[in-house]
Length: 150
Image (cartoon, rainbow, N blue to C red; front, side, top):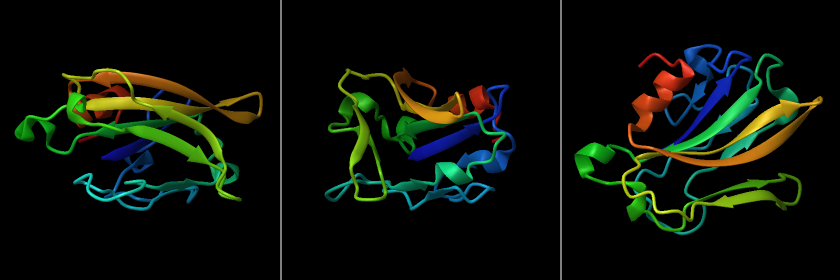
């Protein structure tokens, strides 16, 4: 599942509504819209698409964290070591040019959640930082880290 955490200056979500996923698809400011989640990985092309209009992001949001978890990973006995071709691409909506791309090329054989990267504010603009950090406590771990009630 593709998940986004919209963080304030304290490193926590502003409210639970600032946790964006398939069941809460639009940020409160309307700047981020999750187009749906491919929960099976079947099919060709991009599995999930999220549109972000950075000019509309609430001024209180300092970071947007891009994460992916495996749905029901523990029950299915799955981890990211079993996933191939995982990547995140950021495209310019005008023309579709790739702004940045990060491919998961490490062996994440025990991890069920990945922090792929983050957009963060700096000097009045937005920057992207690839993170690639794996976690083995899935969605619950991210929610605890970023202050989301589950």
